[in-house]
Length: 549
Image (cartoon, rainbow, N blue to C red; front, side):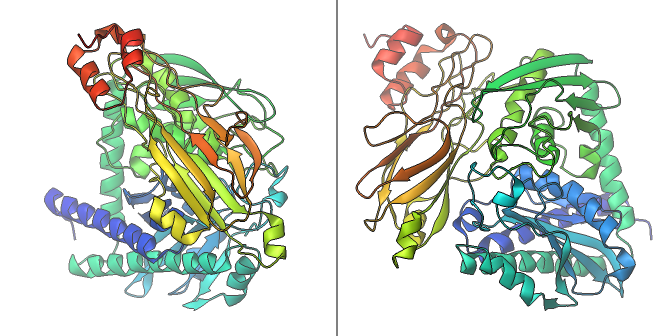
């Protein structure tokens, strides 16, 4: 049966509502705060060829765009003709799933009228999988925790209890991990059930015609958007803090009528520590950045992703090869949008924001080892906080906002309820946004201490401490990040930190860069910033030439 364009659009919208329901099921059923409070997930629907046809808006590019390719890989390993109703497959292999061991990716075949008609898939973050845990200290993938190759998690509706027990036995948070696995299963099952219901409601026997319509329409629209971008070759370099050495990220962006290719040739080699990035993750964030500027109104699916290609030499830090340590791959992976924006600004100068804080300030905390040995409370948690985004050409940057990850900041009350910590202070950081015609977004000032009189460990892997976010078109840089314990010296951006009982961990997230000349900022906007406490009187005078008189 052939459907008209209106019916096809209605069915497309239905798919989008299904994946949003999937995402909400995962969030509401999850145990870990980073999932249920921060939304560190993805959910999607795929056709028989493994092409992503719909994805939940709730979720991160690092999960969504890696999932789009991971499903294709899993389908080469598990033939459709061997699948049974109720089967679900799983892996956390960084080079298949989303770049590090803490993300579990599930794939479930959807059945209708006794045959597979498509697939549902989802990803979420598990807070702890053993090893050295979420931190950059590992020197190979084997240091970093439990690696699960592609396997069957659920066999014809029967959960692989041994696999779940293995995951629990290798975790400092076994109950949370088990709960999160069942939340992922519920996410897949919900999507599959809703998809089958949609097939019946619209009288469909096959998903392929709708999938073809979605993918072809999106592909055509994306190529039209690319056609509006000046053709050429654009290059950019970005210095980042790194770990043992500063790191240079290099990009060459080639725009043609057929698509866009991004090449990381010239980028620094891998680190000895776990800040290396598998190419699938670097690709996910790089393509996301391009799609934010080019065809941003086109839904994200296999069709709109197809015109973008990302390559890089094996062994560079954005194309790390096994068994490189990759636990904190988001630290540099989330810097790639700023790298890409530096290229796109040359082609579209009035469309691209200034650099931002970019990499989220993901702060994994856990008890000091002697605490558990002495019968004290063992815990592992990740606090997620964000800095300011870069100023946009015609609007200020956003303060304490997760771009590009989209992961919401950890809430004070929830954090204190699940871990023995006390958050003493959390507020915006005045003057941290770079000055400009439009101002960069502000970072945050946060203070944390122990709530039970025991020391705890912090595993630092953040950016923008040595190299702050640059302004664009004459705008000023944002303030760099800053971490210290009490009145002690500033700490480097990577490494293990011990916080003793009675001490206070202080961290300040970076601000975004400004856009345009500061003297061009309207006087009422400066006065409002001063009144709101966003900009101090001295900074307003020094950067904007403002006077209260």
